[in-house]
Image 1 (cartoon, rainbow, N blue to C red):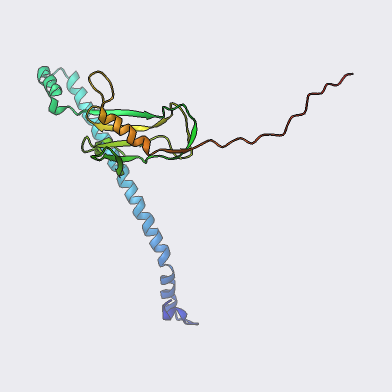
Image 2 (cartoon, rainbow, N blue to C red; image 1 turned 90 degrees about the vertical axis):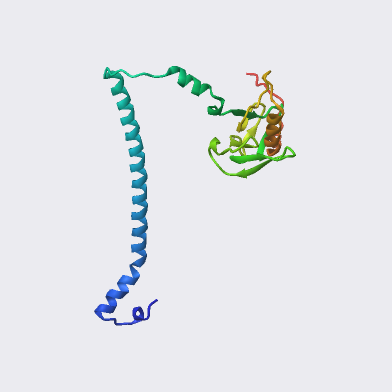
Length: 212
């Protein structure tokens, strides 16, 4: 506390100064609230601007279509561009399931994020991300966790979704070795415990019949 705030009978100027010092916390809170409100407003305005821009572009496209103005589209050039291997991204998506005939309770499961396959075939967690575009090579994969701790793990239960660059199947539509290593590495990170044993209830007495 400031020395002048400890005076028993402060003057008018000192009293005003004390009130100003005591009110500083409220002013800081109001400033923080205003800054957050401004940041939220900026985000909303940017989102609205993007939406309006897309709507305007769509409107202009349809306006050109119905205006009767002739324009040419080179269909062969478009098809050639789509068929160019350099313009095609090769991705694979696998839904990893629990395939054993068992039921237990999950205690640990790999987190959502980017995983990396090491040279010895082990799969390790590398970094957090929420989009497959963060995958930089075929040695990385994006994993979206579905099964979490506390969930029941049964035959057919979804453990998660794995997205990688490149193909995960052979020409005969079988999983290739790289895909098998990914699946094995993810499943190795899942742990579970047996279901608790149900306690036996009280023994039931022999049925009795009442004769009237």
